[in-house]
Length: 462
Image 1 (cartoon, one colour):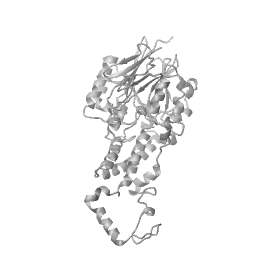
Image 2 (cartoon, one colour):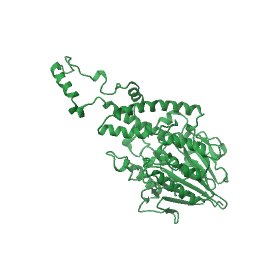
Image 3 (cartoon, rainbow, N blue to C red):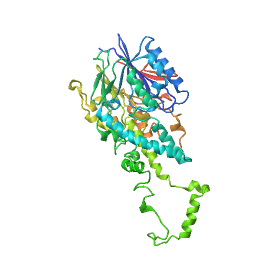
Image 4 (tube, rainbow, N blue to C red):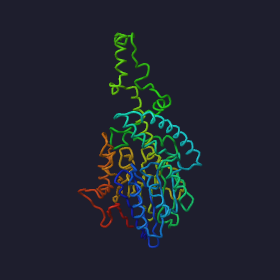
């Protein structure tokens, strides 16, 4: 009979971000896995915060121990920036094995092609940002905010951004050669009893269509009004390519009005009235009325889409506790297309093959995707999570400015998804900001939950 104990620790970041330490323990060895380490805003106090976390990890695993496995799910600040904020501390701590997604492999032809395509679009966004940075006003500030978060963390391509630096650091710091994982890979924990824990890789998908499909379809979302919110990427690329409005925007020729020409109501615009309008239009005191750059609102939508596309490239890991069959699911920020692709994962070891329904049915721990956003957990797959011991951890903090201060705040966690998670887990939900949530039928196993000023932790005893 197995005597393995699993501790899952979620560090409190006081903003949006992911930082998890998972420890598998038996009579002979502790095996320590770190999954992501980053925060969204990266303020002046961020280095101090992450150094404190690394110090806590060292105290937990022992002064002579190092991290056995480090996973970075995808290249976003809120999952990777901590590796740079506490680079020296992580170097001292040590990492035995680092794993990244196949998309981070600079020798993979498919990854290279995606990186080049992505890089071209990013360069266009940088040019657009240069235009917008000179603008003032509410609209301009909104677009600047979206572009700053995206442009400063160029996905797939390594540059001087925090994520770029973190990727290069992780590629070089491990004692063992780095591994790039693809859907269908099955990984035994190096140096640990292979009959106790194995890792099934579900995503990111290899096909471009799934990678680009970030929004849930009808009946895939718990928020029916928000399903299928995809934007016309080709149209917005045209805006970025040409620098002016395309056929769907109001400056297309067919929408323009000219003096001395009749409109459809047989009205004629006089030359004098046109001169008066033009004079007022260029007057600086009426600058607030000008709309000639309103087409740039499409850039904001495009930036948000590209940001979601990066989330969809998340490495997805299902840790199987072999003897009991229980599964721990870590999805990064995977969105709809990534989730959908799990049904057809090409497993590379038929002897260990586990179908999706079976895997989800055995899931006892779910790290909720993308801080509980509406499009990062699709309904059909969550419906398969039927285990009586299911627990959910949500790395969310309501004090984050995206949630607390925006005119249109991010809905994290999304209301209907949160309601469903409460029902599925019988209230066994933990958050960074609230710890163990209050729930009328809370039935956590005795001694399974621990809260510390730095983290919340859940223990699974076999």
